[in-house]
Structure formats: structure tokens, C-alpha cells
Amino acid sequence: MYNTRLSKPSGSYVATRQVLLDAQQTQGLEIIGAFARRNGRVQLEMSLTNRGMTDLTDFAIQFNKNTYGIMPGSALGVSCVPSGRSTEIALALVVGGPSAPTQPLTNIQIALKCSLGVFYFQTQYSLHILLEETGACDQSQFLRMWQSLPDTQPHNVQGVRFASMSEMRDKLAMNNVFAVAERVVGAATHFYTSSKLCDGSVFYSEIKVANNMQAAVVATKCSDAAAIAAYQTAVADICTAV
Image 1 (spheres, helix red, strand yellow):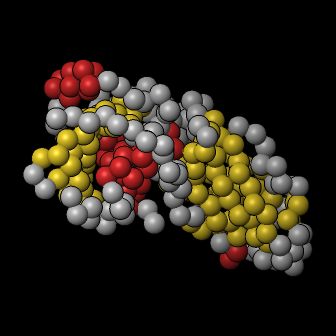
Image 2 (cartoon, rainbow, N blue to C red):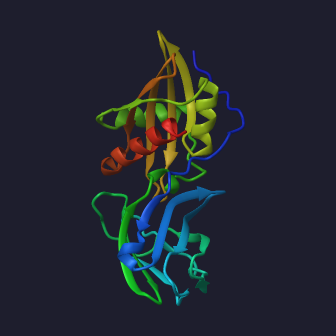
Image 3 (cartoon, one colour):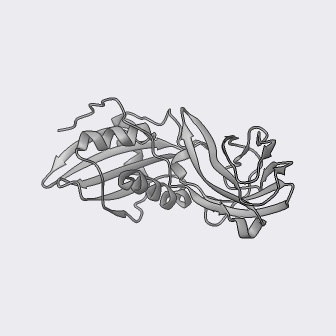
């Protein structure tokens, strides 16, 4: 009835880069970027473009307190961005620093300093960047927790972009959403998955995927109910990413 076969994951999901600061706000500096998790490490990947007439120097960055205490793990590492040039940065981040609740849960406020001044912006990250590689559980634990935790609102996913169930299972695993079991019921395959957040919270999900691979329904249970919506959105993003 149940199948727990796993094959090698095919790639990790990184959200589309967004404009974090535009050149009009800063009178010359444009920043686009996205948060990512690569090889177990969280980072903010950015492209800094100098659209002004003078070189930009004196860079520094600071994060406000946020839900999971995400903060820079090193200096920004940029000494100068010449006029008309761009610089790529992968800023290493650490988790578990000073924290404070934010709304939405994954919102983060950032201050960036350069020779033009200090600029403030806010953005959001996908919760999957905080899922750990140790989030797999066995079927007995899954069943025990699934039966003990209350039901929550399921999340409907349209536009699933996988060619097969095995490809979907592998992609989820690469992003630390681990298949505990799966079974076929009628015209759908049900994946039962577990994930562990950086603060130790564990998400238990049933992902019901139509056999035509076009849509899915994600139902999740977790002791931290406030994080479920952000988690289900992250799973949906993984399933629909191009």
C-alpha cells in the first residue's frame, strides 16, 4: 500500500529575484535579490548595479529583528561598485539571532549603507530556506503526530510543473520536504511528508496530487499553527516553479 522509495534529488528551488531598492530611491544604486538555501546554508543573493555617475563605496548592511533571528553572518564584502557596473554578492546569513515577531511571518526589514547614504527596505523570504536537512521522520512518528494535531485549512495548488510523481518527490526532498510514504487513491497520489524548521517545529503534510500532474492540495499539521500558511505557500512555490 505504501511506497517509500527515494531517488536522487534534481535541484533546489530559489525564488525569482525581486527589486529590493531601485535607482530612483537611492539616486543611483539598484539592488535586485532573493533569499536562497544552498548546501544547507542560508544566503541573500544580490546584484548591486551602480546607475549613477560616481563610484559607490563604504557598504554595510544590517537586518532588523525578525521572526527567526535571521542576520548577516559576515560583512557585505563589497568595497566599491564603479559607475555603470554591477557586482554579484552571496551574503551568508545565520539563524537564531535576536528575534521579534513580524507580520507577515516571513517579513524582514533591512538597512543598507553606502556612500550615497542609508537606505531602508523590506522584503519576504520563502520559508523553505529555513527547513533543515534532518527533517525526515518514520511512518510511526508521522501517524502518531498526524492523529494528535488538529486539522488546518488546506492549500490548493494550481499549475504543478512536474512530469512525474518521482520527479516531484525528488524535488521536494532537495528542498527538505521529505516523503514518509505515498499511496495511490483513485485518480490521485497522496504524499505524506515531514519537514523540520530551524526552531525545531516539525510540519507533517499530506500532499494530494492529481494523476494528470496539474493540481495538488496540501494539508499540513504542526504544533506551531502560525507557521503553517507560510510553509504551505513555500511547498506550493516549489511545486510550481519553472
